[in-house]
Amino acid sequence: MRVLIVEDEPRLAENIARGLREAAAYAVDVVHDGEAGLSAIQANPYDAVILDLMLPKLDGMQVLQRIRQAGRRTPVLVLTARDDKESVIALLNAGADDYLTKPFDLGELLARTKALVRRGKGQASPILAVDDLQVNTADRTVYRNSRSITLTAMEYRVLEYLAHRPGAVVSKKELLEHLYDYNWEKFSNVIEVYVSGLRRKLNDGSSRKLIHTLRNQGYVLRA
Image 1: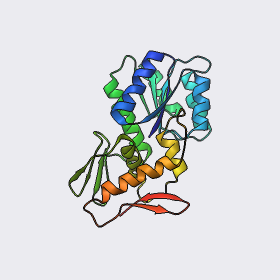
Image 2: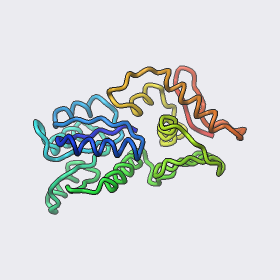
Image 3: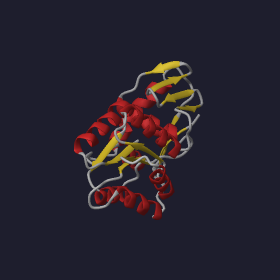
Image 4: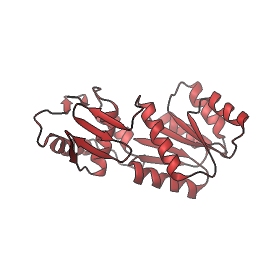
């Protein structure tokens, strides 16, 4: 999953980014003003956006209103110093999916961001199940037929994204866009390497394949 942080306090932004990378294995982009945030959202298919309300150049409310007016449904968690009822109502009416008031607990922010990503994919539960495979997005554990499977960080990212879209054909381009931040040199063959490793680990001891390749289209996770 790929998340954008729009926050003008560099230290806070980096703490949030580090938490998302380490605790959720998300790819994270960081920008420090509203104009850069709006441009990034318009250019990239993020799975969630963490948006500070008080930003230079373009404030968070304006960013939120513009992306919603453009029809973008990306889940947005707003960070705000105001928690009065009128401010909260205005945020929700403008299209915010959730909000946190500063100062906040980092653990709560991580949990809320994970929940937004799940809801954005149409999943309420942290456990994603496909046939006899279970992916627990809360603690990043993977089981198949009760057998624990150990994955590398990138293998897990690929699997989690596919598990959020069971039965759908996911192209290499889509995987690259959602699994890497904008500093990554995007070479499509790395996806093939991770999928190959995933197949080997998921199929060990099972006669039923779960990850299927559709020539010139991409990958699909299904029984």
